[in-house]
Image 1 (cartoon, one colour):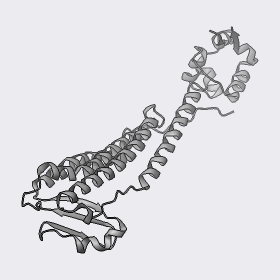
Image 2: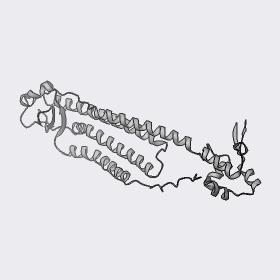
Image 3: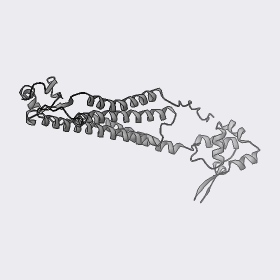
Image 4: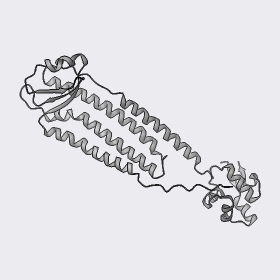
Length: 213
Length: 68
C-alpha cells in the first residue's frame, strides 16, 4: 500500500512577477509625487473635463474667454483637456490650484502603487509555498477597497477641480462639466472580493487539513 | 477537555518495533508518526489507519482510546 506523503516542490522564496510588481509599485509611487510636482513647475493648470453631451456641441465654439487663456482640445466625445495658463484678470494660476488639478492623478497613481504592492505580496507568499497565509484574504479586500476609493475619489476630485477651474475662468455655465464614474473599477473590486472569499475558504480548508496524517 | 489518546508507543514496544521500521512498513514519514504518537495529530486518513493496523496486527480500538 502506498501511503507516502507527496514530496512538496521546494517553494521559491520570491516570484519573478512579485519582484516586477514591487518595482512597478515603487515606480508608481515616485510618479504619484513627481507628476504633480512637475505640473506645479509648469505655468498652467490642466484639468480633464467631462462635458455634458448637450453642451459639447456648443462649448468649444461658444465659450467667451480671452484668447490665449483657455485651450480646449479633444475629439468628438465629451472629454476634453482644459488648459488654463492665466486667469481672466491676467493673474497666473496659483500653485494650489495647479496642485489641486493633479489630485486625481495623485490618487490614481497612489492607488495603483498600493494595488501593485499588495499583489506583489500575494504572489510572494504563493511563490514561497504559503498560498493561504492569513493576510492573503485581507490583501484582496484591501485591493478592492483601494480600487473603489481611488477610482471614485479620483473621479470626484477631477470633477470638482474641473468645475472650480471652469468657474475661475469665466462663466461656469458656458462649459457644463458633468461627473463621470466608470463601472469598470466596481467590477474589478467585485472580482477582488470574490478572490478574497476564495482565499478565506482556502485558509479554512488548510487549517482543517493541518495535522492530517 | 476530552481527547483521543494514541497508544502507538506501547503497541510498538509490545512488538519490539521502532518508529523507523513502522514508517518504512506503512509509508508514513517518521515526523508524521511522531505527531501521531505524541497526540498532536488532528485527523487521520482511513488509508493510514488501515496501514497501521496491518503493520501492527491490531484493531483501531487498540491504537486509540477516548478520554472524556
